[in-house]
Length: 235
Ligand SMILES: *Cc1c(COP(=O)(O)O)cnc(C)c1O
Image (tube, rainbow, N blue to C red):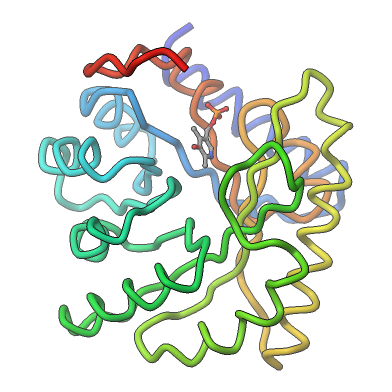
């Protein structure tokens, strides 16, 4: 199947999931995750209306972004090391993977130096085991205000990565929990948060039923990820 057909198929599935949940499809943003895929694949999607893309790694993103049209927007969805913060602030329009207090402070520092405000999502490790990174649900409310007080950071919502399971129904409770956490954060901040970033190729319909506003889709759109160009040692 061609890229545009897969894109069309995913948009239909998003619409169907919204209909089932009684939601407006305009509330759900599709973020194509282009990691390990080429600038050409990105360019092709731009011909079909995609303008915002997700990347996991700074090095890869840097090369790809410079090879892509300049009018695109990029969001970081992968774990960020503190020595890459300066690049991250320069390359990305939003950082979804704020997973610890120290990285929030470091992003703030570089955003300040760049005279930029940085929209961020707080990554929550709801599942506890599967995902390696993210705030624990129990600590989220404690870091919320200190992060919100960082002048250059704008908290736009929460993000989670559900563990991969063959049956997406199994991760529904994780999405429900993230939604409840978002409500608790809104209450504590006294302001609404725009985004619940949850749902990937294998589980985005369930995530939409549970309130996702942003689904991050790689494989179902681009096909299987080619091996990274630099081979990594086997784990
Ligand atoms: C790779 C990745 C995705 C996309 O995963 P697919 O299963 O290929 O859709 C989404 N979110 C994050 C954080 C990722 O690293």
